[in-house]
Image 1 (cartoon, rainbow, N blue to C red):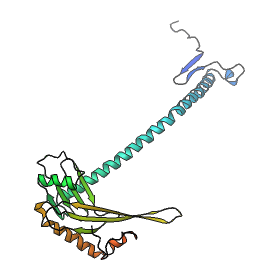
Image 2 (image 1 turned 30 degrees about the vertical axis):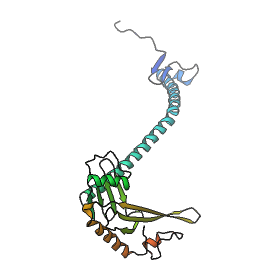
Image 3 (image 1 turned 90 degrees about the vertical axis):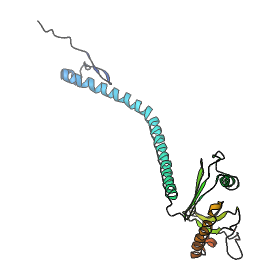
Image 4 (image 1 turned 180 degrees about the horizontal axis):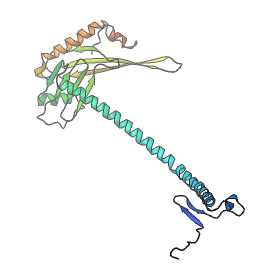
Length: 250
């Protein structure tokens, strides 16, 4: 004959599940149901064994995978927050440098900038080019100091901040002085609230070309303080004396 009967296979290989015997146990129901029942019985046995192996493998790697996924999610969240904060900062700086809502914009000569770095802006890089002159932008809410390699964005408002002092004497090398106060309140569970008072003093060197604009900055903040005369008192702790005349000077 052209075709020859193949010998009956005793085992069937099932991928990922192993080998399954097609010969059921003697006396079992499968023995009386023929070849299909034998295949079902073998497949059921091999499938159960394969699932057990797979379950053990998943138990081994699942814990590590969860930790890796959580770590990646944490890094992604932190990265997104940093990126969003940087984008917001760039947008604020762009508005200031474009002159939007700016009270004063000052440019220092290289020598004035060198003295400003030494006396007040000590955080600025000393690697700035000797021919570089820094810049200062002052708005009702922000001071932006721009150096060649480093800059600083100072908040005058937000989170309860209030300018409580502004002055400028007009003398040679006299700085513009601004004081910002604010307080934070922490409420503890089933306990009294804790109030912390904060204060920051800023001395901005005034370049020779800005002798006329500096008093206008003082006038603006003085007028705004006049609209809320009790602001400085509410932001000063009881054990701090600011002045017998109620003026927050420094």
